[in-house]
Length: 115
Image (cartoon, rainbow, N blue to C red; front, side, top):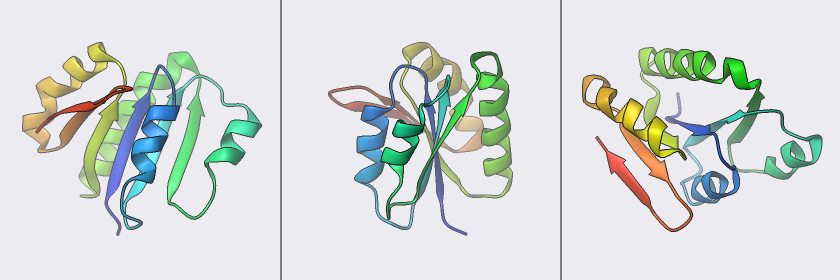
């Protein structure tokens, strides 16, 4: 199975998408987006790179995010979790050492990681 990066998108999907396109083709990136995605945005993300974008209702975002994290971690595929909100980064960074997964804060200019 190919390694998986879970991207939790709360503020905007463009920066996370750009980072995903920089990765090798053998990495799978799943963007879990808070809110609905227009059909035009979903069509834009397609192509040859293994990037998947899933729009979720706002109230279901965190329960689905935790389910994805646990499920991918249990299968051994989860390599990293990307977040774009500092509060989410702090929340997940406290658990990173227990699971051995890299937590990355994606910003417009750079990114910060915790392992």
